[in-house]
Image (cartoon, rainbow, N blue to C red; front, side):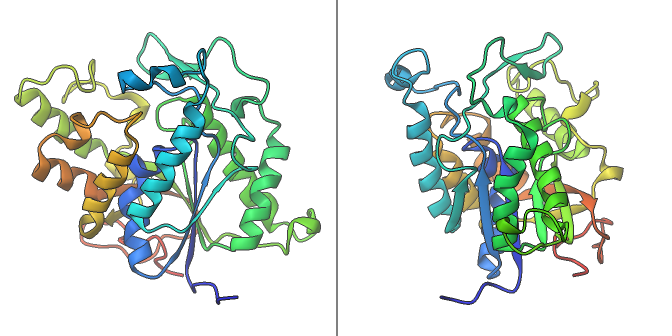
Length: 303
């Protein structure tokens, strides 16, 4: 059995594609550094919107095969990023995508009806214990997940935040469920974040080009709500410019969910520069040395 890498990072995401959108450049960058990168995905995204017309038969109300297809997309995306350790929480299909709808104010909320095994309905301790076992096996120094709003309100993202937060606490308790492994205290926990200034700059560029549909209802000088994080609250910026091409390839692998000619891929130079930087808020642990912008450049800083 090969020796575990000295530095280890665990990321907890809700659905296939979330990892590439929010942390793809970070994952690939740390793989390049020899860090052990483990991705845990909580559902197979069975209720996702299908963007390829000829695949519409996979929908939940028809063949209900989208989850299996998205697991295949995720496998390809992980190969693009170089991540070799990827797991589904409880195993593939254990928890089902909870679905969502849009609130009138523009953020995601729970769907009217959900499956009995929908992730958002999962018992928190039961779901957390599944992650505790992974934490105690992998023994990461860094955990990455969403904030309490799940980025944009999706119930599965919010549940992923809750499960990851609780599991990190339980995993460290010396007397808790020793059948799940030896206790392990994660040194640093980060929440993914979108820089407010970056988002406003992007909106200025989009509106300047006449694009009024992307991020519709959000304007450069307007109220952006909880989707963004004020720059003063950011803790870290990972420069993923050396890996951004692989991030874009991983995004392209999620073809059922991401438009191949959409926002992510519009304007190759500017698009790549925008998506290469990934921002985080520290939720546990001490901030390490920072760069010229006042942000950590390494999630392992200070360890």
